[in-house]
Length: 69
Image (cartoon, rainbow, N blue to C red; front, side):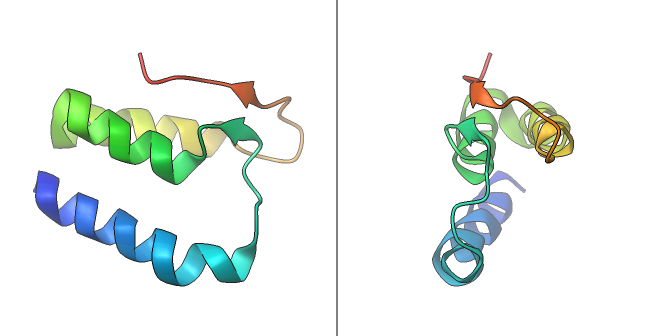
């Protein structure tokens, strides 16, 4: 499961993200955060952290530096 999520995120980074441009308000970007969270915490907990992060990435968010716990 972990490797499938990694492949999907890498595909997003290489094919979809360049077309959208730099939209993320956080550093590291949401997709990099998701990759790191999945590597550190596994598919379930890392995926949960990634989903929570994406939900916080909206126009009214201040953004800024937000490392993986």
